[in-house]
Each structure stands twice: as C-alpha cells, then as structure tokens.
Amino acid sequence: MDGHLAHDLIGFAVLAGLLTMLPGLDTAQILRAATLNGPRAAYATVFGIMTGVLLWGIAAAVGISALLLASKILYQGFLVVSAGYLLYLGIKMLSDSRNMQELTVDTSTSTRRGWQEYSRAFFVTFTNPKNGAFYIAILPQFLPENLSPVAGGLLLATIHSLECFIWFSLLIWGTNLARNFFARTQVRVWLERMSGIALIGFGIRMAMEVKA
Image 1 (cartoon, rainbow, N blue to C red):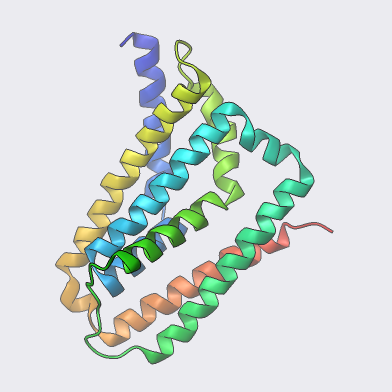
Image 2 (tube, rainbow, N blue to C red):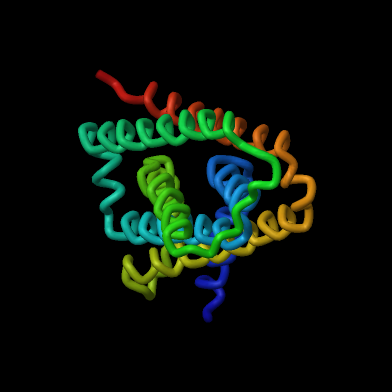
C-alpha cells in the first residue's frame, strides 16, 4: 500500500469513526434492540445499518446520490418517505411502551424477529438523504486514484461499516453486562419512549425540509 493511499484511508477512517461514535438515530436503534430483544436482535440492527452504509457508499461513488441531491423531486420524495416512516416508528414505540411488563425482555433467535430488526434498520439508514449528503461531500476527497469509483466507494464504505460494527458491538455488550438494570420495566419504558421521541424528532425535522 503506497503512502498516499494509506493517508487517504486513515483520514477517511478517522472522520467516519468520529461520525459513527456521535450519538444519534443509529445509537438509539442499537440500544433499543439490545435492551428489548437481546444481543442477536441488536446485531441484526447493526447489519441493517451496515448494509445501508455500503449501498450509500457505492451510490455516491457512481453518482447516484449526486443525482438524488441534484433533483428536487427525487430528494423531496426521499424526505417524505423517510419522514413518514420515522414518524410511524416513533408513534408505534410510544404506543408500545404503554403495554410493557416486568421481565419481558425477548431474546428470541427467530428468523422473523431478526429480519424485522434488520429491515427496519436498513430502511431507516438507506432512506435518510443525509447519509447520501455525507458521502457526496466526503467520498470524492478520499477515493483511491488507482481503483475504479465503485471499488473505491465500496472500500471506503466497508471501512465505515467495520467501524460501525466495532463501536456498536461495544454498545451491545455494555448493555448486556448491565442487563439487570435494563431489564427493569421503568428503564425499558423510558428507553422506548426516548427512542420514539427521537425518531419523531428526526421525522419532523425531515418533514420540515420538504418544500412546496
């Protein structure tokens, strides 16, 4: 690996790593899944986020997300879909929090539950145009010159995804170590409501960006 390539990869890794560790929507999803359904469900959420990140990286490298950001209709369509879905999830979480009972943490390994967690996390990540904006703004500065755009975008997105996996694993196992605390009904209700409020807040903010 030549020095210039190593410098670009390290620079991107530092920037993407800092972004990953900032508390936000992804963190809320991971903590909720780990608390309510256990580590396996939380990892399904992680892989959903990682898949969304990989697709955004490839899309940015080939110019798809640039087209999205350049087209007012496409961009606003993405905003409407994403805002609506976030509002739906947030309201559902607030509603579900009213029916939580003591010691109902579900560590089921069912394929259906894992798929639900995965698909929800993927949809939230991939329908968020802010992820496209990040890659459009950052990716061109770090794309390796000796690789095709698709290969370079996939490489950088893979680095970002691995950082997501490592950081979120720390959150998952930290939550698991404190499972007795998080198993308390009041704590789980609080986390569910805070996650719901966060999703509604993100949804409202996206909806406000939609211009007539």
